[in-house]
Image 1 (tube, rainbow over the protein chains, first blue to last red):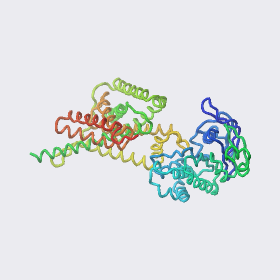
Image 2: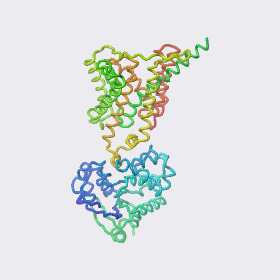
Image 3: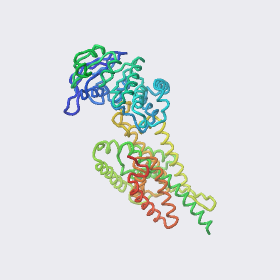
Image 4: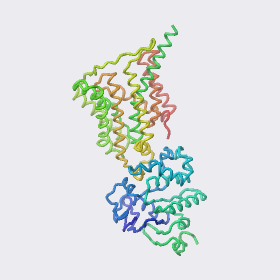
Length: 234
Length: 289
């Protein structure tokens, strides 16, 4: 569904990604794991075109994204849940969800998808008239994921959904991610919480200092010597 | 004696209410632009002047009926607003605020000078006089009543648009997090142009209401530009609800203050009130952050 071929990118003179190649097939859940500053967020930002790749090619369902302006990427079926959730704090929960369905072809499905998101996250239905800025961290993450689902995406990009949350809430969020994968969504998730995310996804890539260092089925990476030593402290 | 006194006081209060509606409409466009784009259109009142000239020329020179001339003037000023953003604001969008002020200030003088050259300095009157309405012993000018009702309808319309529609929600969202708007499928630069056209349309609506009450001349912007700006600051710059409240407070000071003393004193009191509030709440009545 999504393929990156030798994609490089950076900010100004600083290069953050070096010839990264990866692939996500339809129905798969894939994680990109790695330490802070490895370029994981940059990777997602390049896919949704918030920053331009300096070289390489990104294809969604076989079609290149190169010529597309950032605001048209969502129409290709890619929804991005950004780092730190980035809800609109002074809009209500429901208005935030509405923004997720802004794209013209999504609007006619608004009430249908709203019901789906409320079914997935009953807490959001209870809080629908509340300003998003007053939600707890876990609720904000639900709202941010719900907002992305409102566009009816084929591919969901999740940027560190567990960041900044209490341990109990982290468990709940990974439970949600598992449920979303089981719903048949194709998911590309970026995480620092390596042990947890590898239990949820099928396959993973290890990103270090902007380069793919390892890849394989999640269970295999969980058992790899390098990852156990460097990240899991075993 | 005291009965007569009371009824004229009531008249002053009601006149203040009518004036407040108009001032609220004036401040709404400026607040919308500042709240969304974070730029102050110093030349806002000069856009209104352009709209007043548009109504005047279409009606008096080209004999268009008012119901056609006025919507056309609204469209013209809306286009001016969009052009102002595209050609003047956009290049300085990320520049220092002082540069943005200077640029829109430059447009103010440009429009004034251009109007002087094109239309001359004489006061031009639309030649439409609406009757006075008497209610008991009180009398009100119908043009003020019309202005109040249209201004209120315009504000309700704008409120519903911002609250209910996708585009309106995006306009509110963009001021909270501009950087992630593309992830919602929203092009920020397009929303900015649309918002500027809306701000222009509000200025155009105000010009239609003002031209019924005042003669138009190249410097007319100076007679309500500063007061519009003060109202926005008093309410909290960019806060539309604050601007609404501030407009009605200001209008009462002008009208009731003018009733007890002289009209000019009304303005003096309102400015004293403004300065006092600025000491008490430097960011305006509803200004947060």
